[in-house]
Image (cartoon, rainbow, N blue to C red; front, side, top):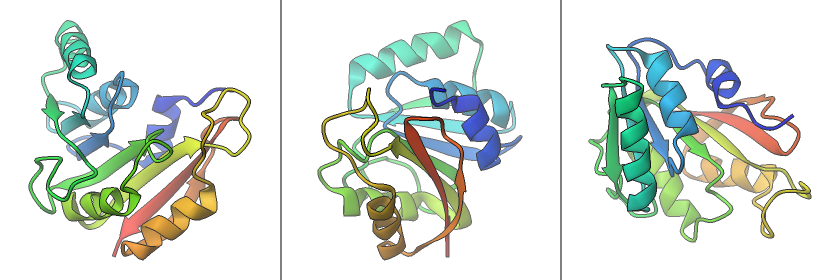
Length: 172
C-alpha cells in the first residue's frame, strides 16, 4: 500500500476550521486533502520553493473550487521563510521532504515557530530500504530526535503505508 494522504490526514485529526500548513507541498496531494477536510472556515497554506509546482497546484485548487487554499512561495529551511505568522497554525504537514532538506534543524524550528502551543506536526517520510524510495533516508529515530531537539513531544505513530513512516509530534 502506498501512502494515502486522506487516510494520513484523518489519522492526524485535520478537521473543520483548522489552519494547516503543508511544508514542501509539491504536487499538492496533502494540501488539497487538508483543504477539503478544513472546509470553508479553515485555511490551508501550501508552501514550496518550486514555483512551477505551486502554479500547477493553484490551478488545481481553482478547478476544484477550493477557496481556502493559499499558495505560498517560501523556504521552510529558513526561520520566517514560510512567510506565515508566528503561532498561527493548528496543524503542520511535513511529508517526504526531510530526506531532501539540507537544514533539517532550521526546518523543525520553522515548524515550531508557526504552530500554536499544543499544535501538532505530522512527519511522513520514506522508510529505510523502501524499494521505490530515494537514495538517502532520514530514519524514524533521526526524525524523532530532530523534532524532540526542537522542543516537540512525540505523540504517536500512524500507519503511513508500506514505504513510509508517520509520526505525530505536539508543540509543548
